Each structure stands twice: as C-alpha cells, then as structure tokens.
Length: 144
Ligand code: HEM
Image (cartoon, rainbow, N blue to C red; front, side):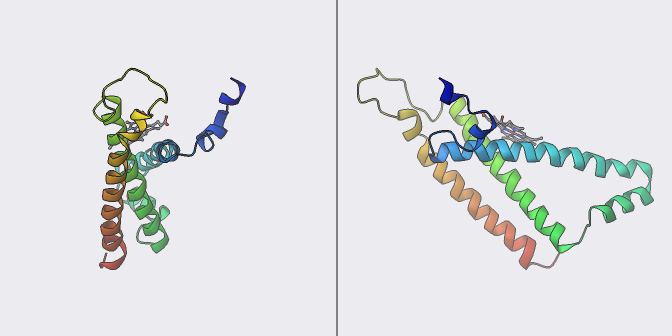
C-alpha cells in the first residue's frame, strides 16, 4: 500500500510507463499551464478597459510581434490542442464508448480497458501531430 502513495512523484513515475500513463501526466501538466495562461490572458485583455494607452502598454509588456513570444504562442497552440484532443479521448472513455463490455474475469485477465481504446489514442495523436505541422507552417513559414 505504501508504494501507492507517490505524491507529486506520481505525476511522472507511476510504476507503469505505458502511453496512457504518459498522456495522463501531459494532460495534468497542460491543464495547469492552461489555468496559468488564462489567468494572465484575462489580466492582459482586461487592460483594454483602462483605455488605449493601457492596452498598448500591456501589448508592449507581453512583447507582441517578438519572434520568441511568437514561438511561445505556437507552444500555446500545442498545449491547447493536446489538452482538447486528449480530453475528448478521456470523455469518450469515461462515457464508456471505447472500453468495451465488461466480461467475466477469467485468468489470464485480458487488459481490455487499455487494449480496446488504444487505436483511438494513436489515431487522435497522429491527427493532432498533422494539425500541429500545419499550424507550424502557418506560424513560421507564412508572412505574419
Ligand atoms: C477543449 C477544451 C477542453 C477539454 C475537452 C478538456 C477536457 C478535460 C478532461 C476530460 C479532463 C479530466 C481528465 C481526467 O478524467 O482525468 C480535464 C482536466 C483538466 N482540465 Fe481540461 N479540458 C478543456 C479545456 C481546459 C481549459 C481551458 C483549462 C484551463 C483553464 C483546463 C484545465 C484542466 C485542468 C487543470 C484539469 C485537471 C487535470 C488533472 O487533474 O489531472 N481544461 N480536461
């Protein structure tokens, strides 16, 4: 029982390193990043309520147009897309669409709940990667 109490280490190391475990860590990490980003985003956009000057000051502060900031904007697309696509996968699983019907547990127990939804995992991640390749082209190859 003791080894199950991993605390924050459990975000990275869970005893098993299957793809689902890895996506769990990434989902939590991207969720926390989104909360942080949205907090800053609301403050920055809210500056518009204090007039044109405050808005332009906020835009200068966040470095709008700076190539490094542009790169971080692209990373934001990566974070949002991953969280949304993986979130859709989790919702489908949690609603029971991808895990199959429960069966009588006969030894050796099949890992149905992991094996069945796994193709969906790869399909969604490949779709996300294709989208991110287009987004990278849009961000970095096309004129701003
Ligand atoms: C397309 C929109 C989104 C979808 C489909 C989505 C989906 C999900 C799902 C299904 C979970 C639960 C994961 C689980 O079952 O363990 C979750 C967790 C979470 N989401 Fe989202 N989400 C979205 C947008 C956001 C946004 C905008 C934020 C930030 C403001 C956010 C922050 C979080 C956080 C912090 C968690 C908890 C992560 C954890 O406990 O491991 N999500 N999301």
